[in-house]
Image (cartoon, rainbow, N blue to C red; front, side, top):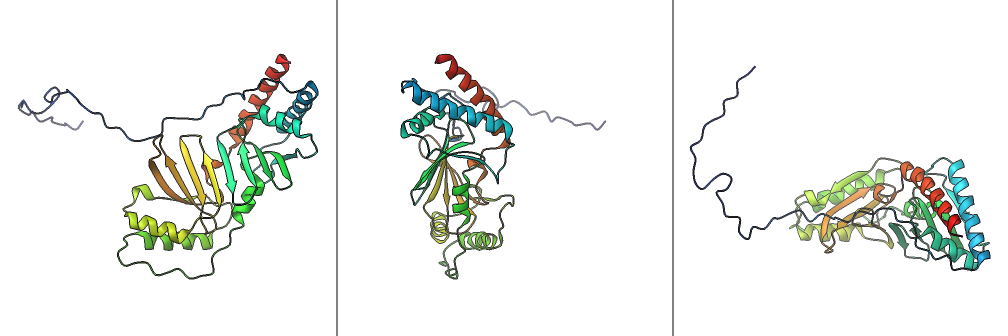
Length: 282
């Protein structure tokens, strides 16, 4: 066995444990997010008329049976239109499903809100009032994938920039070559040397469209679609609204906004328990 000599150092009063004063000591920690989303059953009083509650419960049972019978699929989610139902029944379904951690907004009237049951979404818009079970609302995913690559040539960057021109060239090239279904390419700008001017110019060149996702699964994650196909800003903020992670992702839809197969399985169990709890309260 190789010997590993430990040098003997003479004791000095100004080094080592106990050598420094502890009074008014300030512990500096990372500005990470401490709030983590955990499942909470929706709050409901079941105050609607009995026939409205009964119709809403029938839909929940139909949804549960469909979840049990249908494997998780990204490309072929379960979808139910609530338009044939009375508005009061739709409102009761909304209350019984609750509100979850992910919301999606667009420049038009099409929008989505994940329910308290991960992977079950409420999608609304002009002539649309759906409940969908899947990784991400398919209509909104298709809208995000419909972005066209800009025909204009890239502009010449200012001479005083540091890394932004190279980053933009990399991102633009990947966007032009990208195809749906590929694994994400992530550029963590928080770990790269970049000046405020770099980031401002990069933001300006990438552009932003009216398509944003807010995920509260772990803290506050804001996802914004850029004008380039498949390119997204993914930014995490702490409780003080301070940016703690700034990245660009090239992907269909960033993974932080998606429900996974494990979520689908867990939601099936929780929805069954929730229906049983509601039935016992009626």
